Image: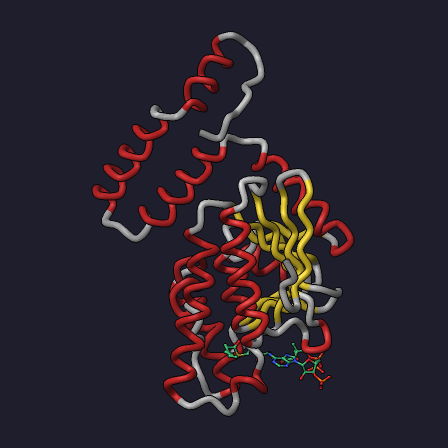
Length: 260
Ligand code: CO8
């Protein structure tokens, strides 16, 4: 299936999605957002796929935001609809079963930073720049940036970035906890693939339960979150992989995961 403005390659249980609209710095217009929503839904349902890597085409931008020319004429109801649609897409990425790694190859601004934050892990190239410059357009972040950014880096620094619209470097993003690591641009996709391969070699039911425990638990009061974790921990003992993993350890052999 063809997805407009996306390139999709599947190899060894790992999918590389490249947002491919370099003439507009891979900014997200509606067509591209719809294609990405469809691709994420299809890949979440594809049993061949274990880990998804998301990147941008070219060496300049991951995603330079929502498409400002498409956004400029919107009225309030349509703008709200666009925000809701993007938020749904980003939730499908964050709360979906499969691990999504953002390979941030350049500008990740506005909606691009918000998309990066929806990924489970962010690996940045040394030229990457992160920011929420919406204030300079007379608006606020609307694709969950006001919520995901403070959760990742704390309220004070998040407010500073949103009030000033300043961009930060990949190194600063790592220091703040916005990116996991920074690598040379030439090594970005290989590094993301290496991490994806490591995760794809793990038992996938347990991987998806870790996502659930972290994503949902962090929103709960701590005692409730601990009980929730215990429930999910208990669920692991209904899987073949728990029997295989512990059996293999005791028999001193490599486990063969069934992902069930
Ligand atoms: N939207 C549309 N076009 C864009 C965008 C964008 N977000 N970013 C860059 N472009 C286009 C430029 O207009 C330019 O097009 P052209 O060649 O036709 O003039 C081309 O990409 C190259 O960009 P520049 O010439 O500006 O490249 P520079 O290297 O000089 O600058 C920057 C790079 C700093 C990244 C600069 O392009 C910039 O500031 N871009 C805008 C960043 C931004 O403000 N992003 C936030 C947007 S708001 C948002 O994301 C909220 C959600 C919006 C909802 C949208 C609903 C559809």
